[in-house]
Length: 363
Image (cartoon, rainbow, N blue to C red; front, side, top):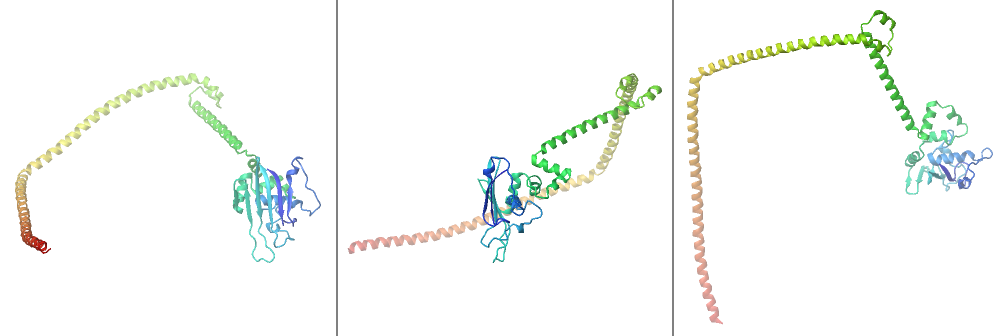
């Protein structure tokens, strides 16, 4: 970040409007702010820190001290800072909360931020934007950029974790820490795998039945002992193959006996089912006469049901006939009425011809 211009109005030691143009000093690369005690050197740092974060550069000055004691009621207290970051110009303007002579209520704090494309207004909104833009909060800014008088020792005597966290955040070295942790995890993983493999080999080596002198001279396992134990291991493998052969033969015999047992068990189950079916058949035979009577009753019920259907059909036909007969009478009555009306209309029509003839004769 490169400061371009600082503007102060009724701010602490600067009662009048004061503008400091730092751009004229950039050619020298390094410049000194000097002056006697109380001339306002620290106020410049306070103004820069206040414009960015709304606080003083030191921890002994509060926001209530920002307004000049010599300012009149009409004077506005504010700080405006123009700075350049990544070849882009930004402007931030901020005013504290302060009381004015003749007013009962204080004037609330305000903040404005302009990046050339948009203007952000509001203390919280500007604070968030400044932290996002600079990458550090006000505490970290005071530790690494704007170290106030008497507070330089705070960073020196801070814990190693605190300094490491601040510097990592400033120089964006989080990716290197992540890579370092990843390497540590890989090393630990391979080390654990090596130890586990060594323990497994040691356990298997201990199971080998070897000569007592050999075991006594190899109390502690070493990978080179594997070659010396290969002969004994070969004997164990041959014995294992022989025992595996006997086991497969015994397993084959067991499977044969199991198959025979399963077949006999199935036959026994079929015999039990046959006995149960025979008992049910005899019970049904004993109930044959009863079932014959029930069948006869069912046939009679079916016949009654058929007759009942014919009766219902007759009743429905009779009802339909009666409705049709009634409709016929209604139609005949309407027809008779229409015929009478037609006769009456014909008479009136004949009279109309007579009236027409009289009208013609009259004229």
